[in-house]
Figure 1 (cartoon, rainbow, N blue to C red):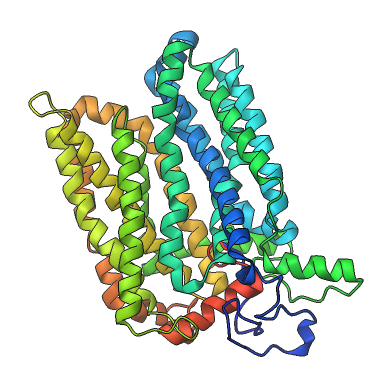
Figure 2: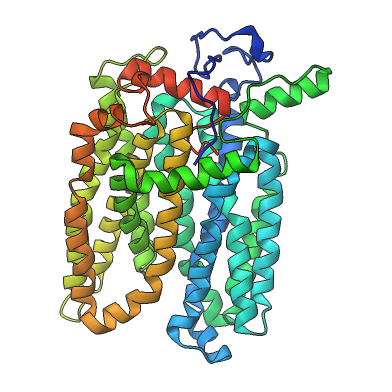
Length: 492
C-alpha cells in the first residue's frame, strides 16, 4: 500500500537525521535532511498530532466495520431477511474498503494526504448516516458499501502518515501502534453499541458511528501535510518555481496506475513466492478477526494492546543486539519477522483453545481469554509480516505487493462471515474453529521460511534490488523510497 519512486532512478535526501544521499540536479526540487518542512523534523508535538489524527480517523472507520453486527437481529426483524443476508451489511462494507489499497496511492500522489483525509471522512459519515435512515435492506446495503468505499482511504493513509513522520528503524513499533486504531476501533463498536441498541434500536449503531466521525473530523481539521512530494510541490507553487519532480512510479497515466496496483499485484499472486506466502497467511489472519461477539471484544482489545507492547519490545531488543546505530543503520529486515514467528504459534493454540472451550462445561471466561490470545497472535503476525514486506522490494514492487496483500485479506474477511455461521452450525463451534486451527498449522511455517530463505527468494525476484538485503543498505532503500514517494508503507 504505497506510492514510490524507483531508488535506482534517482537519489534523494533521506528522511532520517544526519544522512546525506546525493541527487542529480535534474530533479529540481530537494528536501534536505535538516529541512524544517521535512516531516521527520517535525516537533514531537506535531508528529504526535499528525499521528493522532490518522489514528482517530482510522478508528472511526474501523468502528463502522463491526457497528452493524450489534444490531443484526434488529435488521433481520425489520427487513424480514435471514442472518446470512443481514450479514451482507458487514461484508459489503469490507468490499467497499477493499478498493482503498488500489485507489488511495494514486490519490495521495495527486493531492497529498491531508485533503484525502478531510474529504474521505465526511463522505463516509454521510453514507453511514444514510445507512441509519434506510427504509429498505437494499438501501442499507448500498449505503454500507459506499461508507466502506469512502472510509477506506483513512485505513490506508494511516500507514503513510506514520511512515512520513517516524523513523524507519522503528517500523515494527510504529506499525504495531498504528494497527491499534483498526483493532481497537473494531473491538470497541460492539462494546459501546451493545448498550445503545438495547436502549434504542439498530439504527443507532450507524448514528453513533456518524457522531464519532464528526468528533474525529473536528480534531483533524488542522492536520498538517506529511507527504514529502506534496510538500515540495506546494513549496514550489507558493514560491513561483517550476515543479520538476521525477514522475511517480505509482504511475501517471491510467494505464500505468492500473499496471502498478492491478496488473502487477495479480502477476505477483501467482509468481512471487514471498508475496504468495504472506498473502495467504494474512488472509486467514484477518478473516477470522471479525468473528467474535459480546465480551470477547474486551479480550480482543487487551490482546491488541499486548501485541503492540510485545512487538515493540522485540524490535527494541533485536535492534540493540544487532548493534545497529540509530543514525546510520538498522537491523536486517528478517528480524522484523520475529513477532510473526511467535504469533503464528499462538494462533494455532488459541484457535483450538477457543473451539474446544466454548461449551457450557467451561467457564465463559476461558474461551474469552482464548480470544484475547488469538488477537495478540493475529496482530503480532500482521505486524511482523507487513513490516517485513515494507522493505522486501524496491518501492514499486512494494506498492504492488502491499496492494495485493491488503485487498486479498479484506475480500477474504468480507467472504468469511457469510459462511462461518453455516460452518459453526454444521460442524459445531469446536470443529469449525479447529478447521481454521489446522489451516493455521500449515501457515505457521511461513515467517520461519521467510526468515531463513526470504533473502534468497527476493534476490531471485524480478522485482528485487540487491541493496535491500542487509541492514545498512536496507535502511538506505527504505529512506530513499520514503523520501521520493513519501511512503513505501502504503506508502499510500
